[in-house]
Image (cartoon, rainbow, N blue to C red; front, side, top):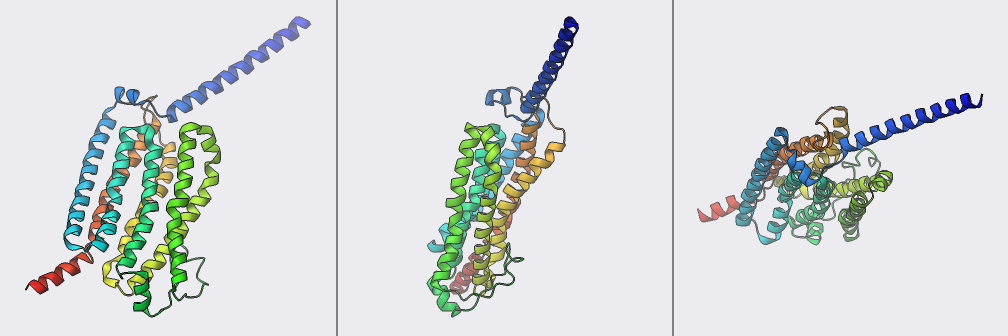
Length: 327
């Protein structure tokens, strides 16, 4: 009787160990499918798809830099110094994002740092764009003089749905100061969060996965607050500088968040349902990251061309005026 019970107990232990072993193997298989290889392993096992992707990525990056240099040289020739520096900084956002996407393809393990650089382009671009908007009207004080305290509506995206009941506001120095803080909080607030997330990601991956969800509301809230303030400012300046294509310039800046953040996160999850790649080291994650970043590179070329068109004004106005005077 005892021997029979011992046999049953041993069989149960063996079955339990077998199940645990299978779970461990499956967990390791999943980790290897989603983990990033070492750089030496990555280039040793390079596939034709990745070689072609790197070639296309380099060409797209060179094209984007060429568009930027053409636009920047035009600005240097035709813009005064107060407008020249912030305008060049604004159009430099897109080649920097292209370089970050290229580095992600060349060094896959650096993807989170490069993704942070893409995110930082909107954080830094917001304050620069606001500075540029008020330099179009010389300064905030000069704007108040030109508009004679004309009321401004707060019902603008991304808060147009929840702020429809708010009354119009008459701009003052204090209210413009609040608007300035709403934009300038982005690089400091989001920058601090992204720094912590990078440290956690590269030091303790499990802790990063556990706390990441708690950071998201703060990042989203900061983006909405900054974008709302910029949209209100664009509406204010457009009333007296309507031919400067300010909405188009703002849209180019917003595309950074939509393409490099929102689209990135959506595709990152959606592509998990598509079987790509093989075993480690050229696994599913490598193919997924490569496809997403090639898409971003193509989009950044298109956005650079759109920005080049948007920042022709007030350049074109000044060119026409100089031609009139010379004739």
